[in-house]
Image (cartoon, rainbow, N blue to C red):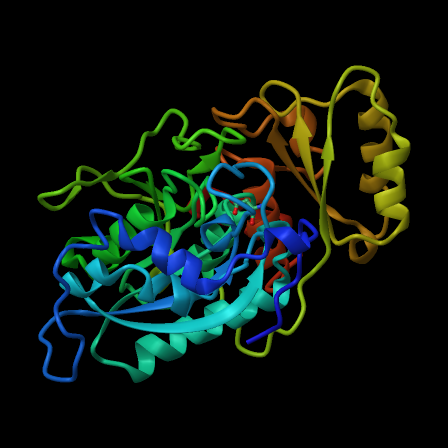
Length: 375
Ligand code: ASP
């Protein structure tokens, strides 16, 4: 476990003790529900909770501190023990992987999570699933990374919250309960990494954060969410069709660092110096957040044409994504002939992750195009 890193400086008067969290949650209807003993004789499914921080573990100065608080103020163990209703659904085992706001999640955290989840599924035959508590800002990125790198078909569910744990009407406790129920659900098996907030189950590949403060922030544009977690049961209505988890070809064995891939955002009169600086800096790949269907301006194109002239080994792979928030980016001859890859429906931050993983295996553009069709 790493010491917590602060996102918002903790004010002395704003110190919140774990006991305050337990006290705040003790009055909660769900927390008050009878909990079953979590002992070795329990026949409940085992769910591991791997905690990384975020608002779900956030603490503010008062119950109305909704926008100023410290992410990662509580440990996963504290969140779990403040929610005895979890014991009605699963035997919980908790571990702390990090305790940060999710803008500060690192590639090392991703490697630690993927490695630990694989080890849990390998070594604990009783483990029904894993829940990862995470800040919402980059939750979709961690979810998609794990969707491509965890090598088992048992459920991995990412969960966060929009309001800190100390807030009036905090959403974290119910989100955590629902995530554990989803992870314990046999129906969740084989559906890839899932994101559960606001009673809705989304697929890691397609979900994105769409709102700064609203509880219904996680949306899957065009394709829709997979199901609900309601009072009666965990109900699925559809499942992802793209390759993931047990069917993924990406293998982290021996991987300690990732190829460098950055994102360039398009707009009216863009400054091509940004793309040129990335190329000059020796990046391995660039994702373009193009306008419309992944279109770039003449200015950017001139910089990208110079890339096509570089020796193959020194040439970053360019993926076209887009800034619209939904829809496909399809191959187009004018871009394909410059060696670019069409990013399909992946948003720029997800396209970046697939390109990073692709580049751990190959620099062959046709192979990378295949991966963007399959994942
Ligand atoms: N700042 C927080 C984070 O991403 C927001 C959240 O947790 O929702 O960690």
